[in-house]
Length: 479
Image 1 (tube, one colour):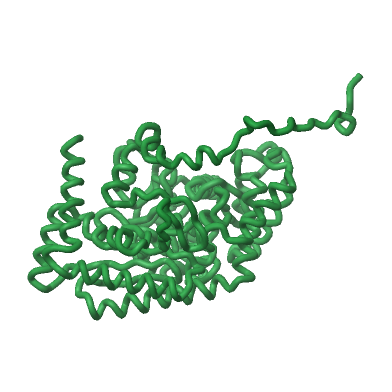
Image 2 (cartoon, rainbow, N blue to C red; image 1 turned 90 degrees about the vertical axis):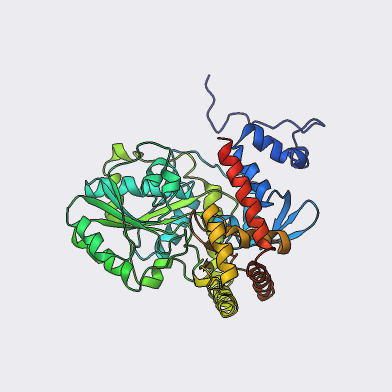
């Protein structure tokens, strides 16, 4: 005789024993960290970290800070490439995660309509200029892949336009609209047809649109590789051109979204309303991988156009109630803790401080930024001694000078930052939006000291440049 689901016996978990699994034993074995990566993962990463002096053993993170095994504190101006807009382990994010684990939600049933995803979709749609429907993903690159598919399905066209120097992720479709050759080289034929066009060049954009085969134009509202802002009015004019010729616009807000520029979305600064908007990184507050594709109603109906196509595009972890809960918590933080105002304040204070240093140091060129997305571009010096050092270093490698800033910031001041891209004399900063004024003052003072060292040739950081150049040449010789 069969037993109904309601009458079936409840499965009781076995009581823990002394041999129960505990992650702590793994976590405490930090000595194996770099050896395991060398042997079982990408072997080049630990070599690079050691060469730069970034081979730290971090054991804790909180807010805008990290701590290593020796107890040294670091100011994190990398923010996990923009994942930690609210810093690490924001109390609301942590509390929400604990609540979800206690609720034991029936997660990832797959053939259902999870309640929290619907709530997050509603909240995102109401905040977005296109008031679109929402499809959830696991990563930023997956949002790009989804947007490309949706654009092709809706327009019945194949060609995708992107901007030179663009970065949209490293999976195959996303890589195909990546404007940085160093990421594309070595991976054979990519998705076709795609074409890169110059930023801010409306004539070049219209020339391609006139051919009538463009499905979509994808762009970052601020380009991450270099922090290049569009000319005023460009994005709105580009949007109008695309619509005139039947193409869609796709705004990649994976790094610029969720308040980083002082608004929920960076396109709000430009008055644009993209057909498809992509969000990821800090959408979940940093604890759960997630992403969202927000697309106009008619685009969704082109993809999911019949009942038998209701799962024609899907993702195993896209319908994750845990990530939806984190997303709702993140939106609550934005709405209730003056995050947008704080991002604007933090960014302005940093940019103003960096611009003040331009008067002091001849190699500081342009300071660019909006909110907490900031870059400093260095320029060739005019004084004879510094010009000699600059020329020598750039002859050895066009990628080395920014390391003369990033490495001593880390080594001497405990500030984590990054170079902006290959062949660029640019250092990039992505501070958490919740940085205090004291954090900003500490950073500006440290940057001042590092720039002072970079303006003394020979010696100082220039010796570091020679060390890094030798390491790079040794690596090339070994291949």
